[in-house]
Image (cartoon, rainbow, N blue to C red):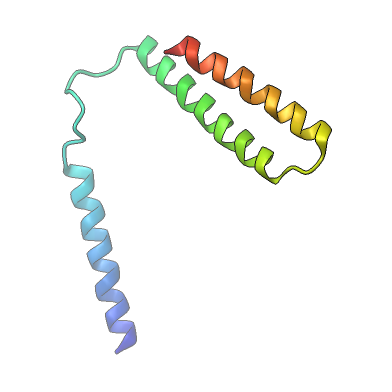
Length: 84
């Protein structure tokens, strides 16, 4: 019976994923230009790098390592401001 319930749950999850794929995303229908796509990719990369650096800073105990991470965060913030 547990196996049957798991299959039922799994099929519901797959069904929900398929519906999500077909649903509109709330974005405009106009596709992004190559320059816009590049800028968006760059921003996402910088945001991910910033999140990782901030997490590393929280876990760091070495003063030298913390100093390096703080400088890296400042540099990432500066780059993000320039992108807009």
